[in-house]
Image (cartoon, rainbow, N blue to C red; front, side, top):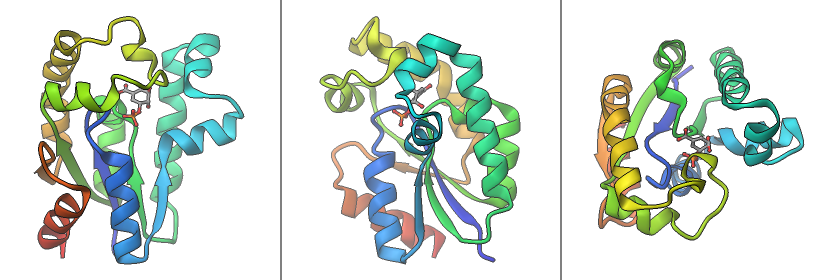
Length: 169
Ligand code: S3P
């Protein structure tokens, strides 16, 4: 089996939209990790964080990646923004597919996330400054996890998708 395609990157990097477009273009199964976790837990991510805390949520992410490692069907996976922060998650992804980092600058991210209230990590401080700090902290983990990096600033979903396909074939 050809491996899965994992899209990683900060919140608002465009993982969900690009994953949808890629899965459509390649006729592959699509999985949005946050959505899958919410479905299984029967509650939104914000409530999971509130009621059981972030470590509990992170364990759910790891469990899902383990399942994907044994899945028969090749899948495009839109990962939650925190997935590459655990080394175990990175091994699981790299062991079962190609990891694509969708990069974006803090201004782009801010413009994409500012009106949503679904992300507990940005709820307290939705500012470009906070996004920049968090992004800088995470950048090394994203870069280390990635087989390839694709910039998304000022680019359409179609352009990003075509760029990925030209590189992974
Ligand atoms: C998170 C990103 C979110 C979601 C959760 C935590 C993070 O997913 O998993 O709120 O740590 O960056 P998106 O990147 O899909 O917004």
